[in-house]
Amino acid sequence: MTLDYLRFAVASVVVKEHTDNNFENVAKLFYMIFRQMKILELIKIIDALTINEETDRALKTQMLHYIEFIVVNLSQKILSFQRVGETPETAFNNYLESENISHEQLQEKITTLIYKEHKEVKEVAVTVNNLVLLAL
Image (cartoon, rainbow, N blue to C red):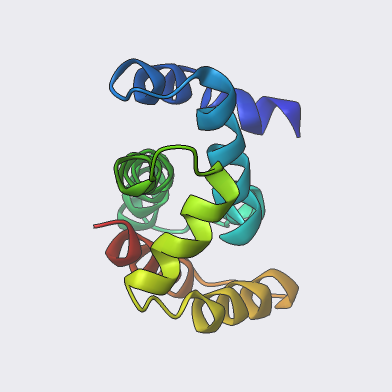
């Protein structure tokens, strides 16, 4: 599990350098996004996908890049939304509320996908794409 977090070490430093926040706030926000959006679970699902075609291999690689984009872009958006003196937790919740983002439905889809025995590349790609839309 630590290795999965290490994929985002450089990304968290880049976000810290491009914002006025300290590393602790950036790390907290990354963790909240990981937990709320079930990022580690999605990475494990993507890593475990059975690849039968070259296009599936390309989709798998793209999804891993999209996951990083999601975490970085969403972090930057929330940090720019954060008010002075506001905790990362409050900023995260306020951002989701202000954008009228219904991430609960997306979380349900991810949870269903996690517990599904056989996962298709296409259905995982659709779920990741929905997260990309959230991060745009």
